[in-house]
Every structure is written in structure tokens, then in C-alpha cells.
Image (tube, rainbow, N blue to C red; front, side):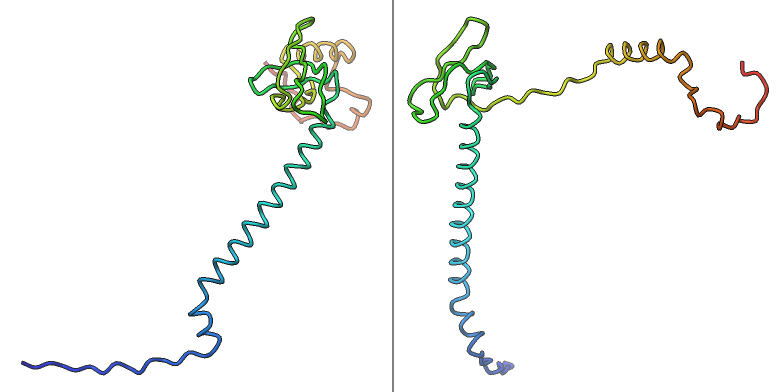
Length: 153
């Protein structure tokens, strides 16, 4: 039998930098990942703290709030210093309820009124009463006719 012997090239010699990263590269990557995780968790905690402080500053009696159960109500009393005390929320006129102070999810910002179709039609008819020919205005003398003098039918 004939066996072909192949020579393997000699092992390449690595420089000091390549040798260091070959031996400790994975460890450095793991260390960098741990530092990043620590930094991002601290940053997130700081952001959450700022949001919590804003929420507590906005919790004044009379604001509309959303509870975690999905109920909307008006805040009657809330103690931002002692969260173990219940908050009193009025869910209907004369119907106050006590809830855990952390059950108040957020303060509801008043929404801008949206224009419904009926309001749009009503405002359009009011505009027509004020301006009987909506296409004409004081500067309509500059408008060129379309050149077609035939009556449209």
C-alpha cells in the first residue's frame, strides 16, 4: 500500500498582541458585556426614577387618573410621601373609592377635541351662510377663466 505523507506547515508564530487576544479575547468580551449591562441597568433605573417623580408631582387632587384596572376617575386625595396610605379616587360624582396608591397608573392628559362629521358639516354650512360664494374672494379678479365658454350640462 502506498501512503502519501503530507507535510504540515510549521505552526505560525503569533505576535504578542495576537497571542494575548487569542488567550484572553473571550474573557475581555465577557467583561465588556457585563460592564455594558451594569451601565444600561443604572441608566434605566435613573430614567424610571425621574418618571416616578414626575408622576408624583402631577398627582394633585382634581386631576383625572387612570387606574390599573382600567377605571377612570378624579383624584381626591393622594399622599406622595407615604405610599402605604390609600389614594381616594372619585369614579362618579359622589362615589369615592379607596385604592392602593400604586394602583394609580397615570394622570390622563385632556385630549384635544376631535372634529366629528356632524361638526364639520355644521361648520361648513355656517361658512356658506357667511360667504355665499365660497369660490370667490376679494382677489378673484386675477383668476383666469378656463377658456371653455360653453355651458356645462
